[in-house]
Amino acid sequence: MRAVKTSDFDYELPSELIAQHPARERGASRLLHLDGSSGAFEDRMFRDLPELVTPGDVLVLNDTRVIKARLLGRKASGGQVEALIERVLDRDRALAQLRASKSPRAGSMLEFEGASAEVLGRRGEFFELRFAGCDDVFALLERIGGTPLPPYIAHAPDAGDEERYQTVYAKTAGAVAAPTAGLHFDDTMLAALRARGVAVASLTLHVGAGTFQPVRVENPVEHRMYAERYSIPQATVAAIAAACAAGHRVLAVGTTSLRALESAAADGELRAGAGETRLFITPGHRFRIVDRLLTNFHLPRSTLLMLVSAFGGMDNVRRAYRHAIGQRYRFFSYGDAMLIERRS
Image 1 (cartoon, rainbow, N blue to C red):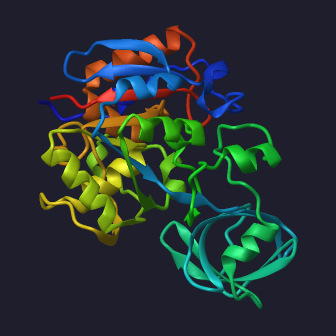
Image 2 (image 1 turned 90 degrees about the vertical axis):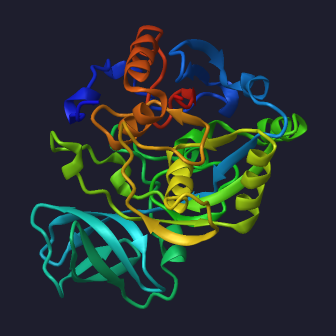
């Protein structure tokens, strides 16, 4: 197999297919079902999902909760600054991406509406901030922050986005982007899957802003992933082990769930625990845990498109995306979904 290039994952997408708002109801999206072994695909609806699973299968959800990570303010000089919190470090410190006409220096102050923060220094792409008089950064962000909608969504976040850019099972605060495959689920769908005999398990991977970062080098090997924190409970490991022992399948909801599972099984055995991952999955990767992937349609030249191409086969995914564009599927975070069977 020849080495892949970033340009292999480029495609033309009409701008009107970038979903700017979610479907009227969570389960109303379309679903493109792709068999990675045969290359065949079928147009379905997301509400058909219970028909596409088998009793005994295990569904793995990412229960991370999106924080209100976007802050608008000013530097001491008066210039505007926008902060996107990447990670909360402790009670008063966080890492953030900063957008300003000129990068602020260590020791300078940033004034946000309802809070001020000192720039402590840089850590690679990020700035370390200390919020003055703060004893709970999460509570502060909930009070003064805005929903961190992706850069391709043009409207300002509103109350509807606060609800819909969050999964119904979100529990553990820490993500700055939603695990978007999970946005299609409502409580009725989860109940239907359980009634079908599907085990529903969870893990946590806090999605970082790097999920939207394009691969800017032609050789993907040179791309550096941002670290993301994950945690997998023993109950999830046990549910997966029981399903596999009985010959059933593991369905990861979202690329984040898949990356957490494959990271935790890097040595061949899935283990419970917490860690950080920079796992970058490209075609040729050997998948150890996940048999099926539920995901949305992804940006051109992105690490996520490379991941799904590794999972379902490059040619298969390329043809499926051409079909989706021709059939006017809705793309990206608020768009439609794909169910991909792993390429054998």
